[in-house]
Length: 358
Image 1 (cartoon, helix red, strand yellow):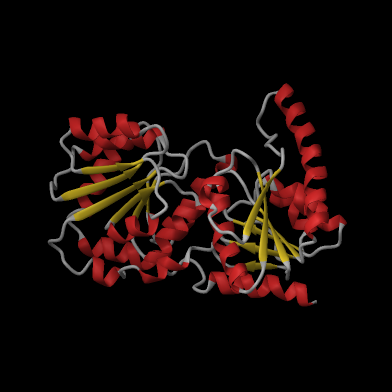
Image 2 (spheres, rainbow, N blue to C red):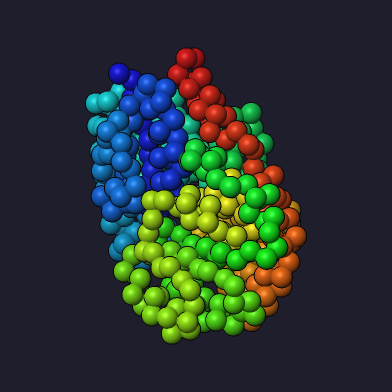
């Protein structure tokens, strides 16, 4: 049995596309050895007997104080040894990194062992690890064009992999056909939730002109009770979830999505075709979420609102306009469907597996 090594850990932005592609490789007869960390989201998300998860001690270094940087550097060196031992044992025929601090030790190990390495970058600006992985990889797949700010034959603009079950959801034509239908607002704070969304949006929604709305709010772990209380206080029809593995069903229900500008959320909105208001996380590394959102906004594929002092006023005004403009909702939904390549998964799978044959 041939193995493919997947290098991914941390938040949903790294884990979900890695898991989606893992399932595709399994369908083609491969087993997956997944190199992650003990605290990563992969330990909750990954549920397949053909995937073995192995933990290494890798952790981020950037932005930490001096002592934490020293400790992080030590763990990074340890994780190179750990990754090397895992890869040497399972002898994968391909190593696939998805960025983040856990990917670099495995990429280095694969390069040293002369195993083909490929890398996927989810955001509009390549992360620190992937900027190094670029030189160790035979092929680079990028979600947004020019995320590495260079042109090369080994870079392929693919978009971000989204699970197959998103192909079976209602089309924009169906969702926006009835101008009198209820507006269903889906609020996504990312895989870790958003304290800003949790604290701000219930009050903002209470000021909408249209009462014919329903809300699903995914608030992150340990936040459900306090967010529910806010919606009850303002007498808003809202379902509050900490987390869900059925995010496709939530998207299918939605008319309007309010989310951060992480690559996974954007790609899922684009796959199904929904109107969206995107609020970038202002403290993202290299401000990549703002740049992700700007790419969509300049193509009339979303409404971009920044998290600033006038946010609540701008959010209420924007929503009140959208609630009475079904044509605008439909246009936003259709435009975002044109942003990324259509056949993302097949493009990545074919252009990675052909390296094995070579």
